[in-house]
Image: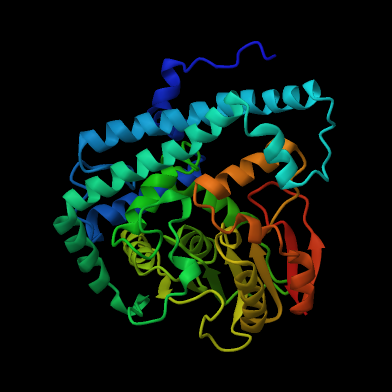
Length: 402
């Protein structure tokens, strides 16, 4: 039995966001601070955004009212407590449950076996419930708040649509495949069904998955720095598929300022928000509402194709189709840099957690994701593939078009 099955929620855990904001200035290098200052000055003088009524934290637009900000800090603190304390207690408890039953934590154990062994334990079950209830409460708050202020937020987006309109392509009559319309991550309407999907995704990830670690898109800038480059060093065109709100695409443009950069996503609200965010930053990126498996670009058009957190949100067949589409649009020697090819699930607790997210947190394609042989499929599509040993902010495999 663990010494503390219920780790105490310390008061400071609930205010991690505010603490991180204060510490960023000390952690930024001189070049990062200079870059952020330039982005902030641009936003203050040229930006089409009008809903920064409570100001900015440098270039980061604050929530429009204190109620949202206070609730946001609370949800961010709950997330940090669960991740840093409760999840660890659940992982220890899983080992205790297996030991008590005389069962070895076998890497070859099936998902079904892991679920049967662990789902009845109250600590493990409570941790899972905390995970998905946090998501639902957070997104419920965000959706209600954005819809209460719908008119000024929509006016802001419409103003942004008209600013550098040549960089935004919306295809509102296109067919939306059924698999893309699920409420991934329990976000109401998913990525296609709510006009504020981009707003909710940006705020929701900052109050959850990216809490305190992605201020000013720092994670995406790290991924951009880690992204593979063609051996000949020629980078004229870059495509980011499943671009969401464009954080990876704008980061790649900041890394390669002379390159033509495109971001595509099936969600019209997502690409609208991505365009508004890029215009606000003064970063010249093109965004289009298109499918990752049918991008409409010419053959051998791009030098680099990137993706982040895409493949676990599409079906098994869509994953295969996307890989082959990437091969089609990459030139020989071009590089595919994707950060969420599936990884090995070693422990029973890890398998149970993935299943719980699939079952209760609307990670509807998690099981499909783990059916895809990514290196094998990439080789069949014409890539030279090698395992890449790095952190989660690196691609799992190097993939070079032959």
